Length: 121
Image (cartoon, rainbow, N blue to C red):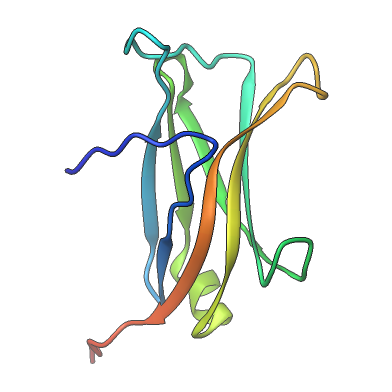
């Protein structure tokens, strides 16, 4: 598995393959490189056709390993198939549950939704 480090200033392209389950693991770290205990925080991600535009999808965020700063973002096969081939934008927001005004943009960028090539009979 390849590891990348991003900040709120980064534009990170995201590819979604239509018709299959898409899954990304996001690990949060403190400035010293240790795992961030993200208990008491939530993560959100939306896909839109353009900033402030039509909502295409809400990504699922699994926080099972939240104490170690790990979130798993996914988009199911049926949902991705409904989007069809298209492009758009996304960003990932991190919010403190106790203070809904404390919201941080982790990163975001463009999305490209690509039909899969292989057909399974």
